[in-house]
Length: 345
Image (cartoon, rainbow, N blue to C red):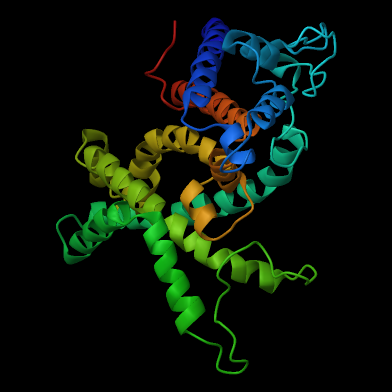
């Protein structure tokens, strides 16, 4: 197992390098760019040249990639022959943890990410936890009562949950609970339409919970549908096996057979599935955070894409890719640990 993990880590380094080249090329090949976002509708040529020099976009694309990757604090960027370093300034490079400065805010990219990441972890952790607390009993009962009315209802709910777009559901919930329904005592909206807390108010647990309800409901529906169907299918494959028939023959109740013997094995693939879904805790849900103005990583990514903020956009993409690769490795290790039949040579 140690040799396998070491081999996978080496592969991860090569994969991240390959992904960085592809992502850097795709981001810079996208129509528009920061010049169109900041130069105005009819920019003058001298304004365009100034902005290109300011953002370091006057260099060839391979040179821009090298500066982004390994930094430029070891040399002087001299794009016009006057020996003056351009206003992009000194950078240590991504390999040394320096993702540069945001074009929009002029703040270090890592500071922007660090200010948003806790909010995303807060929202997505609660969302996935609530989804599991609902999906596991739903999937188990649906498998035990296969083809019953409850099973048909759960199946219909799962299909609907996977089919309904998050942004549409979020807007409908805002219309219902913010625009239509009012508090009968205060006359205010029943639930806030977005944000993480009310503006100008101190910390309040009730206020935080109120702002959390609609985003969690919107994000949870799809996860419940996904996990409940997976648990149902996994459990249905295990319930007819011989070792469960032997357990029933020994006089064990059906509840103990299902919850103690069948469910423990059915949850093995679920654990690896959760490990694969862990990147969402760090990268956030773009649609949910955008609809509810949640100050997290998903909304940060959306803003960076709209503003053509290349350094911020690349940082979010690279960090997200690194989390996905790392969580895939964790899923493989967990699967081998939980299932003795799996061995990595």
